[in-house]
Length: 126
Image (tube, rainbow, N blue to C red):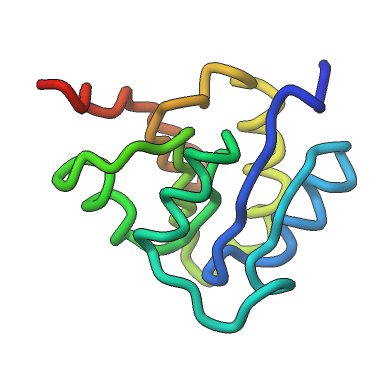
């Protein structure tokens, strides 16, 4: 798979094991924890859209931004892993990216242990 086609922006809530795993698989991942201490959700979603980076987060507020506020984004992967399933988190997210590839662009994806849901975000013009 051509890993250069997909780029990611990981917010501070994203487990850094996911960043390391995706980078090890050859993906371009900008980790906000490496460049800032406090980011604003609205600014992050705008940056992800502008740079065409899929946002990686564990913050449910991004669902509100995408579906209620209809913020433009290149896509969001919301990671929902409880403490007892964290050991498989990085492997699972990497597998989701490798299996679904460009399908994730422009979508809101929820990754949970044993389950992935990919939803098209609402059209901003409607």
